[in-house]
Length: 101
Image (cartoon, rainbow, N blue to C red):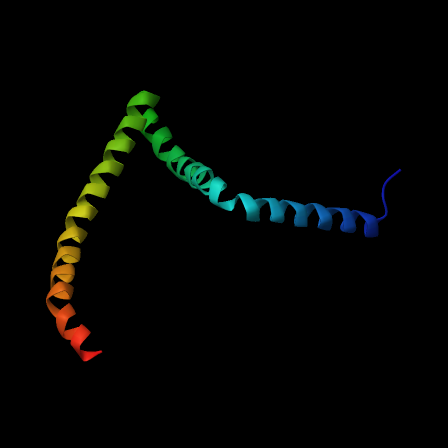
C-alpha cells in the first residue's frame, strides 16, 4: 500500500532537512572529500584518453599529477614576486599610514 502523496512530500521534506543539517555540521570535514571526488570525476576522462594512447593507468595518473604540480609551480612563480613587491611597498608606506591615523 503506497503512502499518499501528501505524506510522501512530508517525509521527503523531513529527510532533506535532516541531510541538510548533517551536511551543515559536517561541512568542514566533508569539504576535502567532496573536492577530491570532484577532481577525480573531472580528471577521469583525461586518464581514459591517456590510456587509449597506450599508457597504463598508473602512468596516466603520474602524468596528470606531474602536470598539476608543474601548473602549480608556474602559478606560484608568477604570483610570488608580485606578493613580495606589494608586501615591501606596504612595509615602506606603513609608517606614513600610521602617522596619518
